[in-house]
Image 1 (spheres, one colour):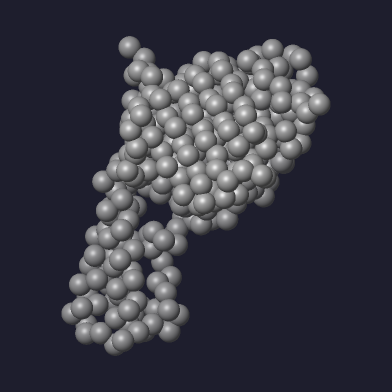
Image 2 (image 1 turned 60 degrees about the vertical axis):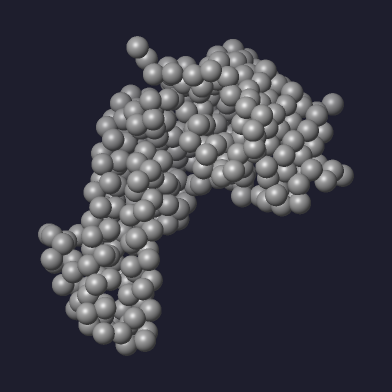
Length: 353
């Protein structure tokens, strides 16, 4: 039996950005929202994201989310999981309250344990052409999402780094430094192993995407490698003076770089804007499959400005690939999308009058 999937059935927004009152019944598979600039296409995807995470993928705070002359915003939605989930979000003066099945949710993590959404947006995390740290954080969030116990390992690693740095500044004893260095190595080794597992899964799924991509690509995590924990521990011991002078540890999981490459060349350098766009969506599709494998539930995929920089042939190829995707897709595009592309989707137009 196939794993169930999340489906957004209905959403109603009141005083969210430019939408004073907007209601939408979504299709179960591919949904395309078109409209002029400023018509509020991205805001609909933003509202769906807020349902799960209580914040915008554009990183805007609650007061900035309200309509110009309003003091608060409200979002109500029904999402099908194993059964219907009724969700309400109320935002006012920088505070966001979330309710599930009529009961207030105490912590946001309690909500996104029930709801999983993946977003690819120009104003969100830029995986292909963003900074290395942005890609590394994305990978770590995926590790934690698939293995929730990993969060304590990341906390332990960062705490050990901080405490070792403090001791170096205050000339702590060798025994104290060794204790924290042991924790750095212990937690760091676990993090590296978990990252390697997720990257292997992503690369496995990305291999299946090669048929429709111009530049089939793979992920690679680069950084300092050690033969064993003892070598890593000895390296930290020998670098104490240098790290004291620099004020930081120069190698470790916090410094690793996630490379997205085709034939050993990074796509952000060798790929065109269109190739980068479809590569980013392919990576999100692989992310969906990784989450489905671990959570036994297919996430909702949000694609903002999904046809940006794509010629007609590449756009059709993308729509054909999304048609094979098992989950629900909500995507936006400008209002002048050709009819032969729109017909692949349930189309909703927001064109201004």
